[in-house]
Image 1 (cartoon, one colour):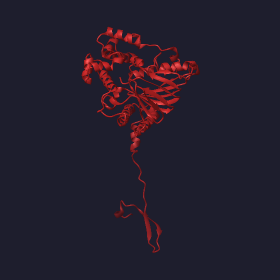
Image 2 (cartoon, one colour; image 1 turned 90 degrees about the vertical axis):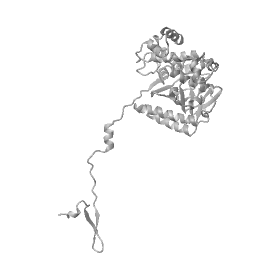
Image 3 (cartoon, one colour; image 1 turned 180 degrees about the vertical axis):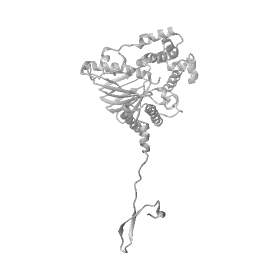
Image 4 (tube, one colour; image 1 turned 60 degrees about the vertical axis):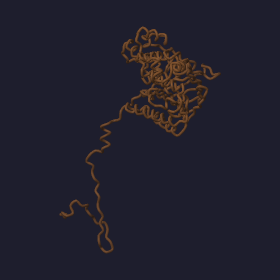
Length: 395
């Protein structure tokens, strides 16, 4: 029988004898047997991985006849920019290009591979298409040169370009692969840095490198992101871009004298927030901006006037709603939400702006060569889903 005084102690066993004959003993350790499952295993069983939330929108010209490739690409990007071939290059030579877009709700991510070309977003394009998002461009390969207001910036791997789609620009690019991010202005409504930043800014400092690392990780995980991931990714992108802007030499802080671009940015924000209000007038804008009517009219002289700008924003807002296949509102309700007091006035203005009626806007056909291109299987007949995504971003 073991001594009861040793109860609970580790048993001792002799293992060797010393020269004086005394036995040396060592404790024998017993491995504890686990009676419950590991905590991490229980958590994993209770919270299985969520399914991927994103379905990419793919467009490619590779399966088209070479003579149709450039025109198909040109048409697909028409809602955004005008594309031209380099001098001396014929459409018959072919234009093999790929475009994959991912819609995270608060931003679009686009992977693109394209031959050499030139591009422009002219004042005429701006008048016919009011998309004015911020566009972030990261070249993986190749080079680009973009001109805004006489200033040319160079894009190349290791640099991050930022430009406004609400401001005219033009440029050219070599054969290249790129990653682009489109962010709605509404995402930065309360950020003073974005009121002062110059369009066509290039970042290449430490913060830019951190942003590139983040974009690399986002790109690698696009196909596996779950729904809860998306708003977090958008918020992180927002925060990192604001940090880049705030640290840029192009930004001199709120004390900087307001430029035309800064005033136009404030106008866009105020108009977008008040589209449905009947009180959205030039006088209301003057009070909001603290400027005279003369100054306001000078700002919008090249855009056809401030009232024309307000109406155009309302029409494009209505067009987005009409183009939404899950929107079951009546046309008169959409018109009212866009700020039109008269359905008849809305119909006339809409037809004049777009060349078709509000009812026809729900079923617009695309050119035959676009229908032959490689579109997602769920794309509606003739629709340009990328253009729809651009138009609805931020709404």
